[in-house]
Length: 112
Length: 114
Image (cartoon, rainbow over all chains, first blue to last red; front, side):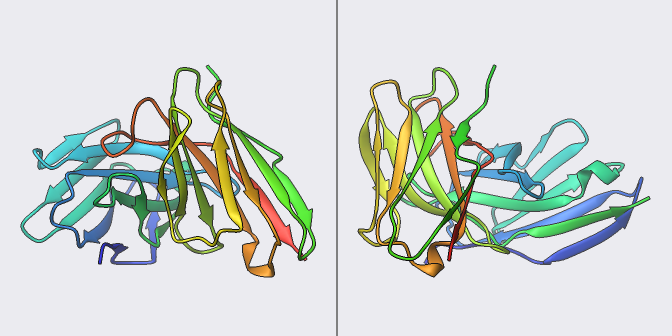
């Protein structure tokens, strides 16, 4: 079946460090992936997306890497700040293209 | 510009009651989707509407229903509430048909069923 999972439920880093959050997906036909950040009491906030014809995409302080061979995504956050503390989800669409499937999320804690 | 707005923000109901949650998409967005998020888990898909038609439905019982209005706003209705329906209900909108577009989420309605 389709599933999107994350390797680690929690990640703790020091302010200024680089953070890497990993995600494995199972649907080899998926061609669009999204990373969301969710702070307590709020809805998921779009961070960055990537299509399957790309291996890497960069945003402001964030980079997403896609390895289609091993069906793996990663989100890299440079110079992590306390405001980056949140739950991070990777997501992909189901085969019908109607439902966004989320993993269980990685909780990032940044200490100063 | 306003983002996706949902109302109410919090709601307390008792078992067996009915609830209606409301969502206004970002201006110009024609697609609305509903998700349920139980504490500690990722959001789970309930419905997707595009141009007032249901385009997808998740694995939820018939107690859950929704509709989209001509102005693209949407309602989610849940009948005969169960304790297990307690969750954060998220509405998301996108410009066109999802599948190749990012969704923009509202802050959700926190539903507690006692």
